[in-house]
Amino acid sequence: MPETATRLAVGDVAPAFTLDDQDGSTVSLSDFAGRKVIVYFYPAASTPGCTKEACDFRDNINSMKAAGYQVLGISKDAPDALRRFRDEQALNFPLLSDVGLAVHQAYGAWGEKSLYGKTVTGTIRSTFVVGEDGKIQLPLYNVKATGHVASLRKKLGLD
View 1: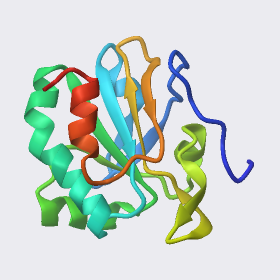
View 2: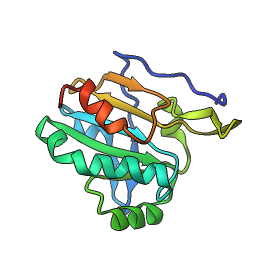
View 3: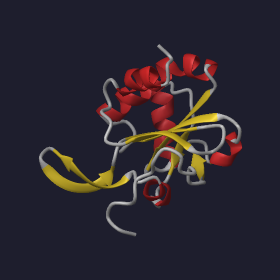
């Protein structure tokens, strides 16, 4: 796999996945077939930016669910770290563990990025809206942790 995977575009079929959640249960994208899903990738549980983004999703989950969206957060953290993150922040949506990075790579959410002026390889903070038909409706790469959920809500017409 190249350092930076191919990016997804509107209309692409969302790559299927099955990952363990924070409790060790398996969650598959296919579990949500026929529903709208927001899949977001974040670098690491319990870091400042990732905590801000996760709490923004937490605080907006009711209106997103009311509009028919399920939120799934994915990181390279192990399930025990995800469980602590969920419990510390009272997160109310599944956090999925992709320690092997296969799902990150399938979504183009792993690759080179700039961090404090240096080029590093890591998680590219990204969000994907998957439609009821299983296709990408909105691919967003290199999003900022702060303000991202508000921006996403506007793009989805939830404001």
